[in-house]
Image (cartoon, rainbow over all chains, first blue to last red; front, side, top):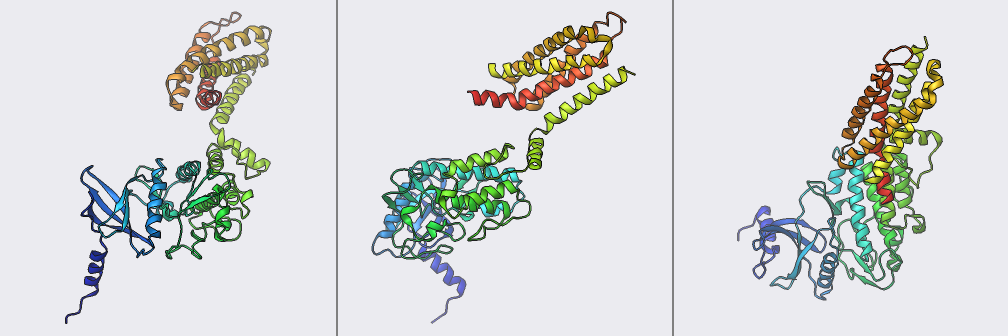
Length: 336
Length: 122
């Protein structure tokens, strides 16, 4: 009997887990990533001449609950047609019975890699606004993401932003901005996933980015403000390059302007009534900051007000000063 | 478009009037202050009109500001061409330099703030 090397074993395992796409129109190109219950593969769609990402269920599912969950995830994604959300192209079953869905293959760094780049503060904030817009759109369509974090957000090569991994998404009946009533839960019995906290199949999300009510497992009480909490944590990460400290207001960090810190603090309020009412309100606040207007979450002193107004109208102020100096000089020299 | 032109004309009228009023500090022309303010306002209103029309077709802030500078300079030159009726002297620098800055200010203000007003009114 001959022993197999570790490399050979890895290759064998990989070959064994590779999905059989013979009854689909896709051709397997390789594995992209692996989560708790799914593996994402890169595949070629020869009929349309494009590459797609195939998300395939990758754990035993005797009850069929996970298949239902993945199908529901695909159907939730399918109704979220937005430039900031990766579109679903197809859903189906492999010959071995496993459920899969095909979606847009997104190239580019994740938000955590983007945050570590040399992007300027306005660039970071504009990227954040695109994230907020995608989430606000989902809320408008009655869908909560529930697992927003830098690892689930991609930044494309042309600055496009895509909110990914809607595996924990929750569809609410009366729109996500209202308190959730009856809900179509995309959870069920969930196997543990790295970085995700689970318990009784109800507490789903990622610590540090999960709203307190979500962490307490109050599934019925989740609404848009729970995602607003996660957005606040993502904003803090984009600014400070670290997740916010749990349980308290976000700590001051080097180079993070105080008004933006106040925005983070409001979004990360433990009481959801103290947070922004919805994602659009957070978007408006960021737009105010970018325009040099007053941020509602931050009460500024007279000096800060003067500095902000100067910064906003710098060119106009200098032109007026130039005019006054010229006019004053002419009058002064003419009078001599 | 009309709101942008209106904004430029209004800013031109205000800055032109202010520019004319500075003649009050010059005792030799203080008795003609009314005429100076009126003509200065008229000059800046014409500049504002031209800048507003230009700004309706061009989006670039720098281009609008430079256009304002040129218009202000040209109109101020036309004014400076007529000599002082008492002394017969020409005040090219005294009229053209502030006139150019006023034109630049009207152009910049129209590009920077005129769009916002038009958008918020729409």
